Length: 67
Image 1 (tube, rainbow, N blue to C red):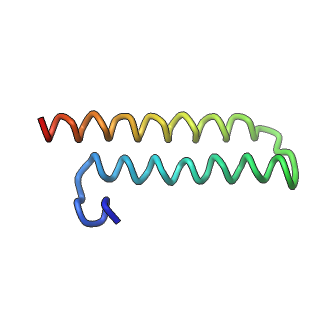
Image 2: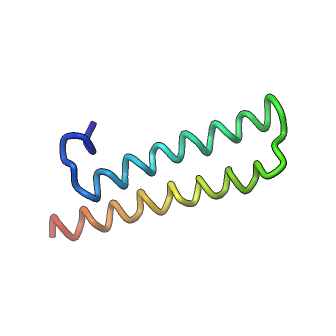
């Protein structure tokens, strides 16, 4: 909701990062409890690191705007 109300790069990157965490955890759970995927580890780590990057960049952007 912050990304929708603020509509700035920092809020949007934070929201995208959060969404990518959901994707990462969903793929991880699917692999563990349902069916192992051929390149599941690539999907999990790819979305996990992209999520970390999005949130980290959003903090830097927000800090630059505030400071």
